[in-house]
Picture 1: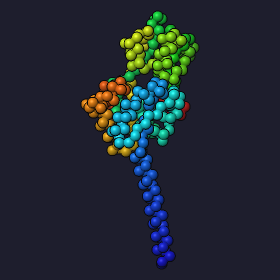
Picture 2: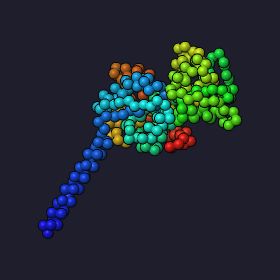
Picture 3: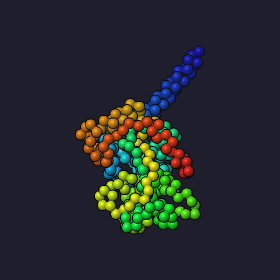
Length: 278
């Protein structure tokens, strides 16, 4: 009997130790001491970090833990990182990636940028083009797949016999430079970047604009606790009401953040099904 009791005591101790280890592991996963914010590479790595550092600093104060920015040099590398959710906790990027994370990785949408966003096909202003098909056989710069721009460009040229020559660029600013210097016949770029160029210096003409999709969103991994998620959501939604928040918003070039749900981005990831790894 004593042997049985002794064996049971040892077993209970082992079970307690295992339970403690599991609890520590879960707590560590659910409450990371440092959050990594992954940002899409529409801009260069350096410019991305500069542009979104005010957001990271604001999130650090809202979450109570350090938030560090991570990005990649191009969309090829970014797509690989997107599919490794153990390497980041928060993500700020386009609609198709946001929906992919919701469907495949269990992420939750926290907030989104106001309104919608589209991509615009532009050419040098000394060579007005009224139809994208006039660019068949010519060079068009685009962010690499699986960016929305690359996918939308493909849909503009459904005829396999009449295709443009695609020039992959690592960021939108490089694509704009190539158009302005006549190194490419055209480029498809985020419409806000095109609008900024038109309002400041011109030098380009609009050929076509794609159908708009919900603007970029901030989403959170399942490893971010519900309490922390709500803390971040509330801070961002009210940011436009405080001087600190207004400075952050001005830094990243928006006036406010809007509420968003998983339904806002429903079916946006369908565009990724043509790419390896979906």
